[in-house]
Length: 183
Image (cartoon, rainbow, N blue to C red; front, side, top):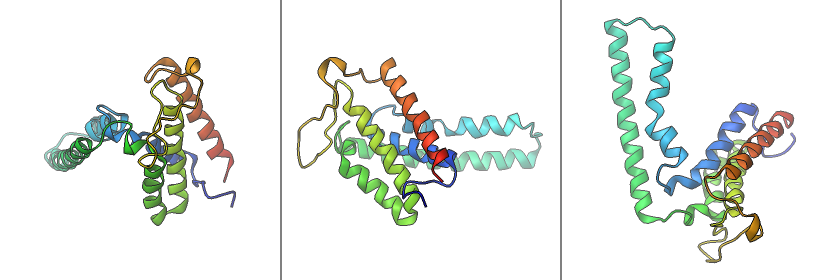
């Protein structure tokens, strides 16, 4: 075994790391997690369903309608939970701390140590990237209220700007390569 942070499949590792990377922004309006996983999931399986050339007949339409109803219910519940959560926390608050990263990944580690480790790496990469921005990150909250900046002021990147996207792309490529090599 090459270490704790190992996923048997690099794609699974990339997906779990990506999930860890976006879960910290659960408190942000229109975060990737909300837009893709919660608001936009129906489009993906609906497009797949019809792209496969599934013939329309009454039974398949009923199955599709049943899945749609379940999905709308799940999305509604998830969005309600997210909205309630957001009403109690501010963006880049408690979800942008080492404590939250350890808590979220620790819960996953109870079920699977490796997957929890990969999720933690993704979560920490999010905190590191936010520490490189002009806004910084409250890494040691709620115990210390100090904002942490990982770059000198003149090199800090703008949140959502092209520099942040370039760094993110680099992190994804490096993460995938490491996950491919470490088995």
